[in-house]
Amino acid sequence: MTTFTPSLGRVALLTCALLGCEGTIAGKRASEPIAPVDDVTMPPGDPTMPRVEGRLALQPIRRLSIVQYENTLRALFPGQLGVDLVSRARYTGASTRTGLEAGFSSDSDTNTVGTSDAANLEDNAEALADFLLTNARTTIPALMPCSLPAAFTDAQVDACIDRFITEFGRRAFRRPVRAAEQTSIRRAYTTVRLTQNASEAWATVMQYFLQAPALLYRAEAGAGTTGVVELTPLELATRLAFLTTDAPPDAELLALAEAGTLNDPAVLDAQTTRLLARPEATAVVSRFVREWLRIDLLDAVPDNDPVLPAALRDDYRAQADHLVRRNLTASSGSLRELFRVGSFPLGTQSDDVYGQPNRGSAAFPDVAVPERTGILSSGPFLSAHSPAGHVVPILRGAFLRRQVLCLPLPPLPANVDLTTPLDAARSAPTARQRLAPTMTLSSCSGCHLSLNPLGYALENYDATGRHRTMENGATIDASGTLDLDDTTRWSFSGPREFFETVASSQALTSCAAKQWFHFAHGRQSAPEEQPFVDELGAATSSSGGTVQQLVSGIVRSPRFTRFLREAAP
Image (cartoon, rainbow, N blue to C red; front, side, top):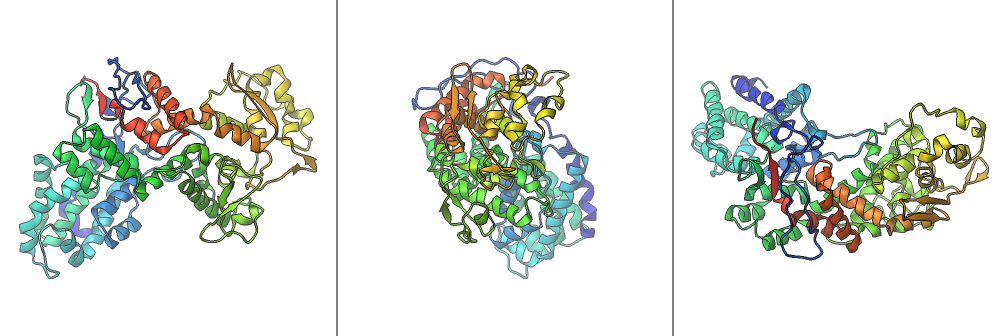
């Protein structure tokens, strides 16, 4: 964009700033040692809320995810202009995640910035600013706080630019623009105005905003220097808004923060309830579930996949979103209901896979499917966990144990022979028969007794999620017995009983609470925080796994309004 040449030197300085913002406060990540800090305890209040806080961990600086950046564009540029900018944005972030690693697309570690990422962020801001400049006769009057005609003059823009920087910057940075920032941005405008018109100088300012670290990062300065630091009211508003809506705070939330009343527990509760009633909150819940269960692995399936055609893949992606939104909204429903639902939204591609031909449509109507119970029996989940189109009970079982139930995986023994024990059973017709030696051999059973039964429970579903009762002409046995721990044994005759056991278990809701803590904070919980996570799990279980409980359990905790800052070295 040649018109920006005079200001690129200043705007390019942001690249260095972006590269310096990929760590955490004080430069540590949550997995590193945590400095000692006094335990914090919940004040008297709702007895259903977690009581024991445990110790605070370092809170990482978080860059906006792709979804959060696009929602920020919509908030800053309302109406069709926001739609146009989002369609042109090429923001660098965690879009397609591969592999079965834990975590979420909005995690701090998922959205770090390398050299190429910084260049891409600059290119993205320049492209968006170029679009705004191309349409300056409509965009400038629409965005400037002063009343400007379509045929505005340079002098009119010059007279309003300081107010624009102050007011637009407040919304873009989610806090007031600091004096040094105001001076720097104004200098960029003035430099371009020496040789170019006001529209081009204004577009330079927009490029500055669209790649500014204060917009891209949720940095929290707090109201203290070291130790346990309280968030400022505006920082609290930002935390709450992104947690519940994946978007910046709206006008009402900002007004309460600026009035100094958002820290009042009753006000914070009321705002949480209000935000959870918005459609954006349901989208957040859907993203949480799809990423927790790694249904988002479907995003990485290529269009020419021989097992999962592109049309069915896209049908499944939409189906998963509908399934969560209809059974687990931010204000109603529960995890237990989602994990035992018997009706599924069917599209034109998935209805046949579900044995319900011609019953699906573009509207994804809910259809009762007798042989399925809950989201774990859905085509999206099952196909996402069929790597390269193969059903691997061990992998499915390991995922269920680690990610859905949050139970530890036994360590793989050193120098274990992974192939010879299976040679004798390799030609057996069913996977259970082929893997039978792993359940009896002493070198294998220590691990596989805790993995295989979970995977066998899903054997009635093939790599596309289609229900089956036979494999290679033999009847599939999906029954199993599993010792969850020293005191809990699961026994099930088939998938329906297995899914019901999972849905009603304490392990599911406790795991959901752990995963939600990770989702809310952008990092895994640290050992020092386990007492709080345990209490949140118990409260979540008592509620049946409602989103309201998950969110309230986080928001009402003092750790939501505080963070740990180490002293500068």
